[in-house]
Length: 342
Image 1 (tube, one colour):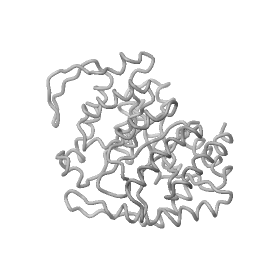
Image 2 (cartoon, one colour):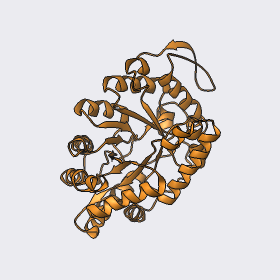
Image 3 (cartoon, helix red, strand yellow):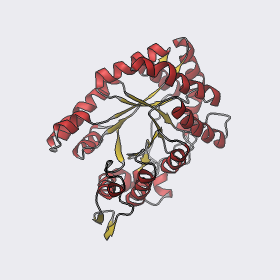
């Protein structure tokens, strides 16, 4: 089982943006010290929900600060980026880190980001498959051309080419954030593992895995690849000596952050978007994920693995909003939970 931290660089009420980003960097550094497998970095624009606007840029910093830890984006928002530019950056990080980089990509939302970056609503509503295919080709082939609805250019060489630089690692891993049957089928057809969100429980995740497996087999992918696909489950982790204390920590801090962050989202076309109730959502997360004693957290992770087949986890550990408490939470995850899983 491979357990990593999930870092949003969340700006809690009363905090500055620099404070949130400093906590994000320290979380990654402590994750390596504590023996975690990976750190996954979120990306958001113009909202305090997350103060990291470029997950791949922060990944570059953290790959330089660490020696063993895998660093992944969760996710780089593909509709606001050119897939070739993102592919070049991913290839560069893959080569210079010795294969420690994972590129998680997602569709994002119909936010004002699409207006600011000039990609438009169509990039979100219909353009994701074309962008994903171009990105994957860039990371797998020696040269690439494009002739599609959004992208068209003559054949150019891929430099640096990941497969040539690290012959034992064919290229950076690409993971697709999936929140709907359509996105599950999209990932399955391409044989790409999924990142499943923290808002859904084991039952729904198991259904998504089953749908992915059927789609991957129908697309002709070999059984061993389908069986061994390294999907990632996102969740929340808060450790305390008593379950009530762990829940209280999150219920005191997270609703204020969620309300401030979710309320700041603006749609590009003025459509109304229903946001979750912050307190109810925090309560839901406490019930779904490893929140409680070290043994309870280990049992919860083991149960998810048994029910879904997922053995990779990206756990939000900064739910207290406090740097010292986050560092302690990560260290306890490494020293008191991971040994119980082995």
